[in-house]
Structures are given as C-alpha cells and as structure tokens.
Length: 322
Image (tube, rainbow, N blue to C red; front, side):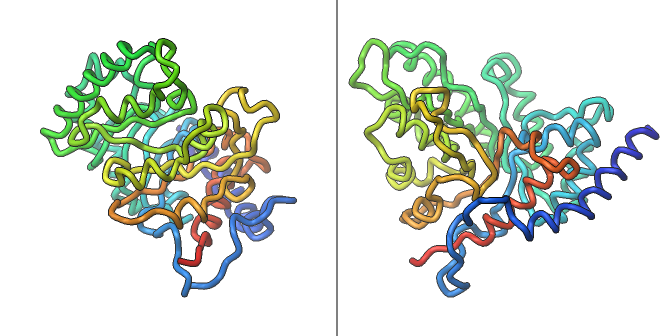
C-alpha cells in the first residue's frame, strides 16, 4: 500500500507540473482540430456529454487505481467514463459498488462498458447486475458480432444480439456493438453485401444499438469504400447513443490493419467538425474520447493522462458554423 501511495503522489505531482504546460503548448507540429470561431457558432461537443473510454488510460489505472485516475479525470473536466474492465491491476481488488462510490465522489457517470461476447454468453445477468450497480445506461462489446463473415454467420450473431438486447432492455439497459473496420467489409459468400448493413438490418432496433468508433468507421470507408460514416447515424440516430471520438492519420497502405493509426485528438486528419456539423438531430449522443495508444504518450508523467487532458481541451474547443 505504501508503494501505491508514493506512486499516486508521484503521478499527481507530474500532472500538476506538466499537464497544463503541455496543454497550452499543444503537440509540436500538430494542427488544431478546427479554427475556433467563437461561442456564437456553437460548440459541437456538449461538455456534459464529454467522456472517456478508460482503455485510453489503462496503464494509470493499473499503476495507481481507479480512485486517483477518477480524481484526475474529474479535475480535467470529463463527466462520463466507459469501462474496459473492472480491475485495477496490482492496486488491489475492488467491487462494482466501490467503483460506483468513486464515480459519485468525483462527479462522474458510467456511460457504458466494453465486455466480451463470451461474457454475454455465459454471464449475462451478472453483466447486467454490474451495469445497474454502476448506474450504467448501456453495456456493449468492442468485438465484431462474429468472426464468421458469411450471411449465415451474421444471421446467427444477430439472433444472439437480439436475445441479449431484449434481456438488457427488460432491465432498462441498452446493448451496443462497437465497430472496427472489419465490420464494413463484405460477406465472403455475398461480396455485394456489406456486413455492417446486414447487422443493422437483422438486429432489432428496440434491442440492439451501435457505438460508432468514428476513426475506425473512416478506416472502413477507406478500406472498403462506398459509404460515409455520418450517413449511418443520420439514417437511424436513435440507434447510436455513443461515439468514440478517436483521431488518426492514414497508414501508407489503406489495406493495412484498420487503415489509420490513432493519435491524440486534434493531431490527426479526421474531419470531426464536418462530421458533427452534419448530424441532423434527433439523437442524444455521448462523446467518448479514446486513444488506444494513450499509454505511450510522452512525457510520462503525465503520459496517458496528459493525452487525456490535451484531447479534452481540443474537444471542448471544437466548433462549427451551423
């Protein structure tokens, strides 16, 4: 325990001494997310709906625990968190009820959680119990609906999601699926059928929702062209309660991986002002910053929490004329 207290003090000293200065300076050579045109033109991301996927700061959670990380996220200004697990490494065991208390203590709300498909298959009611304890309106998965990219494979996966979603809805919780690029590929036995379209068609909109990872959706459009990410949201806004606001730069080979490399918000090329400015209304969205590579952010400290603060400030400053 003594080591954890020392690590926490070291982390917070580093944050106090480094984060604000780095935020003010910005990333060397990085262009701003968009030109600020003043309050009159409208903020594109409401502060009260601005959150973080905790996978972005997973190293700090394992190092100093939820309590210290939540304290810092609250200080930065985040109001919502999406979980990527309920453990805190060597800091020690913690229960969902204790996590909920830490959320409340720091003015944070749980927006959702990423769980595995097998978690839903084998322990669905426990997952929903935890969601209720945390006050979480939605729970989801970052896995593709299935690794079987055939029509039959997606039909079976949709049936599973419909059943899980109905069970979640019975308890007032939304079930969602988070995309990478592969979901925008085509069925191996029907190359004219985009799998993402098929999943939307086969799943019941009363029970199954989508979390659009904006970067990986742009990656899908680059790797498997023929759509615009924003059009999916505008077609069914109520099916998209959550966004992952993730920035990136294109990989040299568009067919490589997710087609983009993720970076801090504002250091990439994703046209967020255009994307959010084109939303036609009718949906209530949660905007969750994520950077998979956050633990590699320098200087460290503050590391991933420094990336979290710089990205938060740029998201707050994102404005558009509309």
